[in-house]
Image 1 (tube, rainbow, N blue to C red):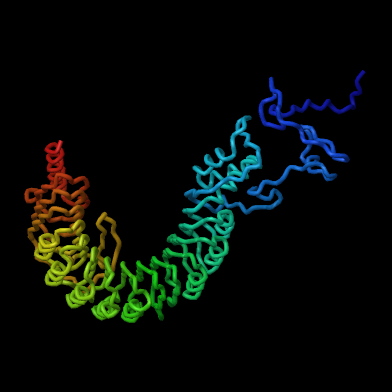
Image 2 (spheres, rainbow, N blue to C red):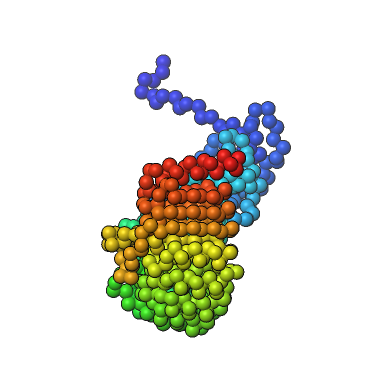
Length: 530
């Protein structure tokens, strides 16, 4: 009779369904792989059902060698998943170190290089999850991290970013959108964790603050000898710029305000973008900044500066810099820029392809100088929010610039600026809108203006906010994008579009009858081309 106090019998423990030597299913299988030779005094080989502690017992027996790319099982990794909001990655080239074993997936062996290629097509979130399945999967995930060359990450904390980056020693392109405050600690972690970083882009969320100082940025740029592209937003705490780098070729800084010093010794720099906050107390000396570019950045080809401190004196200083290789010049929101600055640009630049003077006070005479200076090179001309430019200047540009492909005249032909609220909208060619402070140079344009545009190469035309136009005739066979947002006085019966390739028409804020007329003309164009 069984003892009623005896413990219940232990359920039978099943062994592995696969061979412990080759990984093939055991049923009907005869393993051809020889068992490891046991030397004298060697510990007995543990059975498949033995505990993991027996497999690592000391005594001279054969132990399972640690793979080169595996994580340390005893090491506690921070939970990166908690701070990662959105991640994308691009894989690079690399070779997986093999140890002769396959990875088990669904009870079947899969070659490690195949498994690594599968993991490489996942995002970092999926790779981190896969690394917890088994040691073999963790080895493959480790190889994927090591082969990663590009990473786009939105994170809520710099500590978690610092925990992820050491897994990617070959990272060369990093894009961060930080949802928490950023300071010098971020740059220190990036410099330490990504030694081969070439491209760095940091954008700041609306509820976060960039606390980097000029000294922090200068130290980071000087230490990163491989850095070629640097883009940082929200730079309101940069009290000065003193950058020195022989490798930096592209520099974008936005949110700047009141720089006490601006020195950039970057002989390889080809593109510079400085966007200043629209604040009345900004005391940045743009004249000194422009004047020093010629000696310290002689190879500049693209310049973009957005500031309400731009003036004719700053443009004249740019002329003295003697940057003859400029092909793109964008000086926006400078209401103090007049035709005198245009004359300086014409003298100093010989082959401009893009010119953006949006928000300036140039007139039709300035447009005429531009047409005479760059008839064979200029392909993009942006004159948005230029109150002194009339239909005559716009028609002159389209008639004398045969290579023109993009033209933006938004809010230049505006009939009721006096009724606008403080800070009129400033739009882009794609219809995006941002706000600037109202300028004292804005003038009321005469209403009932007629605009006729004929051009053989023009592809994008923006007339957003041109409420002074009541008649429009466009004959552009290559035009595919037309922006008529807020053209409130344009009459439907006085609109004629002869553009067989027109695909996108933006008419937000227009009368319903005008929208119907646009739709009818587009339908007619589509039926005629079909």
